[in-house]
Image (cartoon, rainbow, N blue to C red):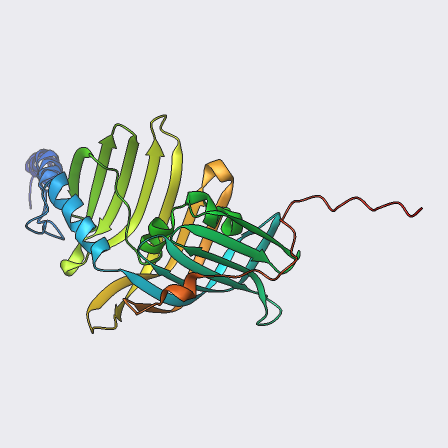
Length: 292
């Protein structure tokens, strides 16, 4: 039989051993947690700095010169929120055409055309029209979003305009496989997030700010898929996009149903002749002439 003194000694030995191992185990666990594991997504080669990223973004925009598509857009039409089908086409050189279809049917509620120089908007709901030079304000007449026609074309295809003469930083998010690009220029700043996994170059978001750090516009893209253009070249484009512009209190949500890239679009497709006799939208009606 073991003596009580020896039993107590063994129990004390075990407790001392246990208490000494406890801190060692905890310390080892902390050391393992502190050691970084292998990056989930190693950084791709060739895009380590701002010039290389900006150059690739420019090449991406240059690869898409025109498109034609059908979408469902959720947007502001005047003071009303509308969700309905929108037929769109565009070509580099400030040429765009929008047909906003009625949610109740296939009739055209509004038709906007920019031919590279001038724009015409016919509002069939209010039986009026607008005309003027084609500029960033032309699209705003229909969608409340102020964008140049070429910027709209690129954003619709998942590309992004980039601040000229930009400098900044490019970091690689190894956990998510994303480039995080921060740009600064005399005219403002811009943040761009790009999915770089498996050789992709998907612009997930792009936010442009002015010199006072106020957001000019922000686009967020999801659900990218592959579309082949008329020449058979594959392009990755977003199926869903959300564009916001706080200064206009505007946002535009787009779900693309179909797009054709780099298609031939003749100049006449961007010419709109308004019906004769339509007044300017917002113009006051002529005063009634008194009958003698």
